[in-house]
Amino acid sequence: MPYIGIQPLTGEFIKLDSLTASATATYALTRGSAAFFPASATQIIVSVNGVTQAPIDAYSVSGSSIVFSENLSATDTIDYILALGEV
Image 1 (cartoon, rainbow, N blue to C red):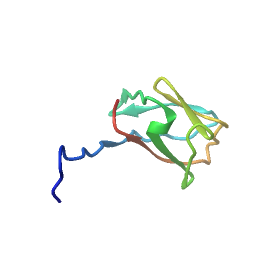
Image 2: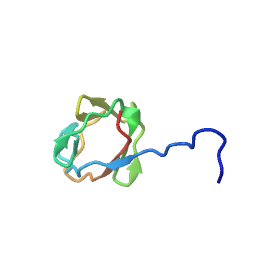
Image 3: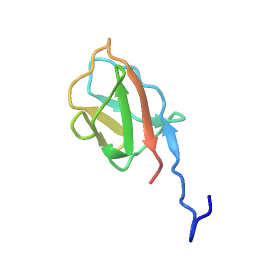
């Protein structure tokens, strides 16, 4: 499809390393075993037990950690964390 001006850029979507839920609310975010620092909670999409979580309401970000509003249990599953590009 032709564009007038500069062609729109597509984002980089990054699946972060898997996390195993335990009886805590804070988890380290990593990409290729290195710390990943999202700009804000709204930059990541999180699925727990098959349900997409609402940024800010269900979780926040502090540096390279995700902090859930409630402790997860060992029976919970963090399906994926998808980062919407790098800042």
